[in-house]
Amino acid sequence: MSTIRLELKDDIHIINGSVRVNYDGRFDGIQVNAYIINSNGLVEFVELNGRKISAYTRLYVAKSEMSNNELSNSEFTFKARADTKGNRIRFRAAIIQEHKEIDSITTFLEY
Image (cartoon, rainbow, N blue to C red; front, side, top):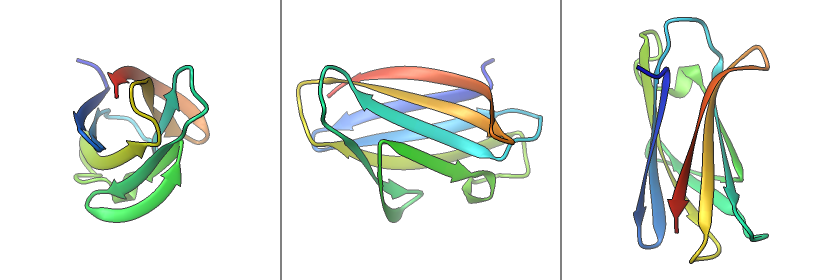
């Protein structure tokens, strides 16, 4: 089983995402990057675990902000929107420990 899982769902005007981490070692948090392919448009992260936020292109979630943060199964949800439609978006989530990447996953979404 992978140590990190990224799931995305396009709901017309918003992208719903969830990240689940199954990692027994130490880590500081998760970084999610979003890039619209062949476009200079931006992805804005607008919600994290039900709380309104505003972060463009990169979202960092500290381990303390994740549910079950003391167990090997930690997770969080986010919502994002892109300023262009009809493009392919690359999402990449990475487990970070002391400024180093431990593991990552990349997923593409047709938006």
